[in-house]
Amino acid sequence: MPWFKNLIQLSSTRFKQSSIKPSLTQLLQFNRDYSVASGVAGLGPTKGDQKPRVVVLGSGWAGCRLMKGLDTSIYDVVCVSPRNHMVFTPLLASTCVGTLEFRSVAEPIGRIQPAISSQPDSYFYLANCTDVDFDKNVVSCQTVTDGVDILEPWNFNISYDKLVIASGAQAMTFGIKGVMEHAIFLREVHHAQEIRRKLLLNLMLSDVPGVTEEEKRRLLHCVVVGGGPTGVEFSGELSDFIMRDVHQRYAHVKDYIHVTLIEANEILSSFDDRLRVYAIKQLTKVSGNFVNEAYPDGK
Image (tube, rainbow, N blue to C red; front, side):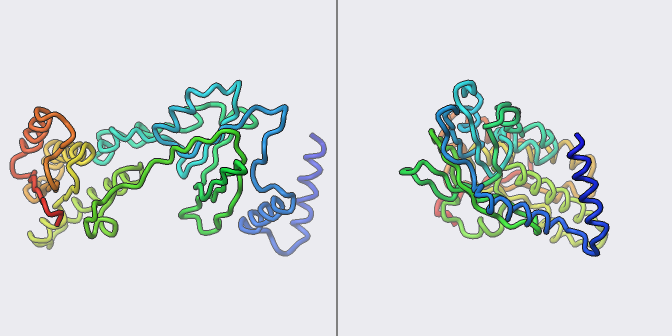
């Protein structure tokens, strides 16, 4: 394309003549200012010759299942979520100890609904929904820029014909003090990555010469708060990891590691009694490495 070559030559000449080279921050700021000046603040209402727009807030089980089954010959789909993938949460605990790799439990949104990547009026936006105007059918969003210092979050709007709110819920702490400040939740891939990093780091630190026995026990004491499906599954994976890997690769500190599962009542309280008994038997088979403690008062 001749016009594109001329544009590159013109740009190169101007940059050579100028003593100041544009930085990435300046280019991003230019793009942002250009969007505002052009009046582009998001997606406006659909026109008569366009397909109705379905906006899905969230990329969890409900949102992804709906997008997968949506007929994109009838609707355009726009997904707004702070993550660009769906997490298969039942297998998330296995990634903490290396039984599965992280890519095995995450499915990209573009693969779940290919129209987002291929059709011109379907999009995915890495953003959070900040407000919904139900009278005007407009969703207000803010981009997610965590960990990127050169980018500041900015706001944009999306008009919708149909809105699906599938943003999930916050994890419950049941008022347990210190959980929000010191514990790691197990709901996202980055949570599992942090648990895996912390577990391996403590194993290697405890094997350093000069570390006292008391410090080894502190470093290798894993406390799981909550005896629901996630807590029990993670405790089981951790116990298997201790038996199969720690006893072989960290033989010098294998006797110091143990797991404590804290639950206010019965573990797996919503499940059948036989399954609950079986889970306890499987967890306690690692003698000396697993402790089940109940705290009825929540302390």
